Amino acid sequence: MALFRRPRLFEPAGSKGFQVRLAPEARDWVVGLADELDALLVTDTEDTRRLFPTAYPDDPERDAGYQILAREQLIDDRREAIALMRTTIAKPHMTVDELAAWMRIVNDLRLVLGTRLDVSEDDDDLDVDGPDLESQLIYRELGYLLSEIVDALTTTLP
Image 1: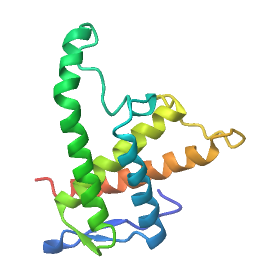
Image 2: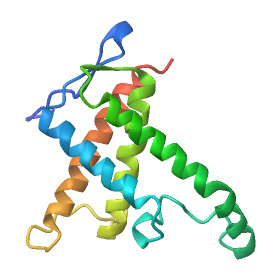
Image 3: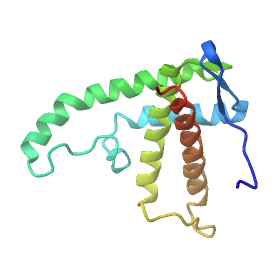
Image 4: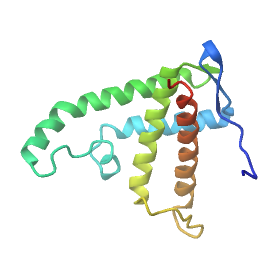
């Protein structure tokens, strides 16, 4: 039983795909975060380590080769999804592909922020007295947004 319900952010809308019920300030917020992610993609910082994981942890030479071959494609794919997010940010409806691009970017944002916060699977407590309370709240809001996107997209599965 849910005592407090939030309205669905993405509601199936037949041939139109999904009706988007994000407030304008939420739209601005998420695209602003996506812009920050876009700038981070070309950096080689600890923040992006979960975006470009090691493919061969026991073979540094093979892993270096993989990173050379795959990293640019991964960056290009993410930038394409960010660009799609920018073009769809004000739309009242989104297609499955557009919403799937949003899902990828929101997940990437959570990965970067989770790395900064050193989040693990066991972390569920909110440290209201901690110096990173704002980041923790952003992480939780991104989790809610991701959950809403996944719930919407599951309605399209056979």
